Image (cartoon, rainbow, N blue to C red; front, side):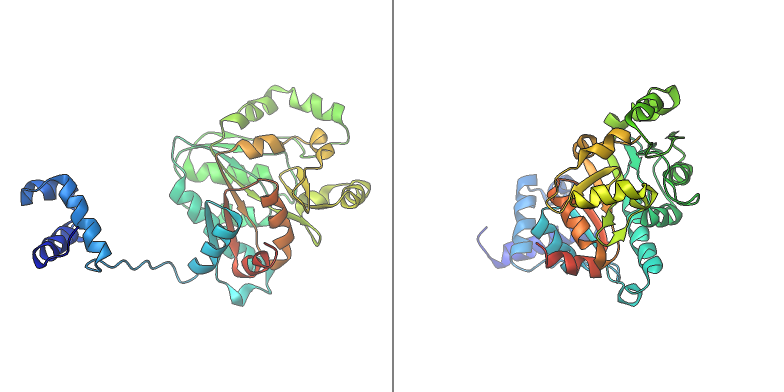
Amino acid sequence: MTASPDSGILAATVARRFYVDGDSKLQIAEDLSISRFRVARLLDYAVANNIVRFTITAPLSHNLELAELIRKRFGYRQVIVIDAPEDENNPTALRQRVGTAAAQLLSETVTDRDVLGIGWGRTMSAMARELVDLAACTVVQLGGMVGSVSENSLELVRRVSEVGGGRAYPLFVPLIVPDEATAAGLRSQPGVQSATQRFSEITVAAAAVGSWQPADSQMRDALAPADRDRLTQMGVVTEVLASPLTREGILVPDLEKRAIALDYAGLVRIPHLILVAAGAHKADAVHAAKLGGLGDTLVTDRSLARALLKLG
């Protein structure tokens, strides 16, 4: 649009009504006796010529610049980075901060049409504790029980579904069993199938990223020492749910055969998979998960984000 005093005045009028007063383009067009297309062009002109200037103010704890660097570098759809330097040497407090951010994200994005999958872990437990508002969506447990009584996946699903009031599909079975035959028998039970049959319907899921090197994983801790040693020797550095991955993001599939959980292929298919992780020591784990194609959204903290940038 050619600049002129008249167009500048009209653009300012249109911009104020649209951005400040909240009037629709149609209403503005009718009131000013111009077309909706001219309203749109005037708004573009106002932005291009600094008649309108946007200021985006995030909560003080959110590091937008670092989040955008991570998003662009690794190809995430969305990244939330919490600035919490005072908590970086306090794992419990740091998990609480990241969990709170994940809870806010779920509150803002999940609708009553979604089917929400919930994983487990200490940061996920913090998320569930901080969740105060959620649409009345269906909630599905992504894997059997692992971890402490207060932090296992069954308890997390109970908390999350209570907040939203939607129907819950729990799994009253262990995450990992001794052999494939036992796993197959459990998967055939009606109560288990009630949940697992919903796996393909999941539209949004939140899951933690477990670290194996260094060790910070509830699933790893629950395995027999022989299993831990074998998988470590095979190069496993991370797991999401019951899917172990190498540093290159390659699936080590044998554990999935003994797991009652959504498998790797199912994880990849979820339209909106939110990964939560706290602490710089999990950078290798998060990097491997991303190389493995897991997660379009990352919720993390400053220390992990900075460590991740050094890897990418």
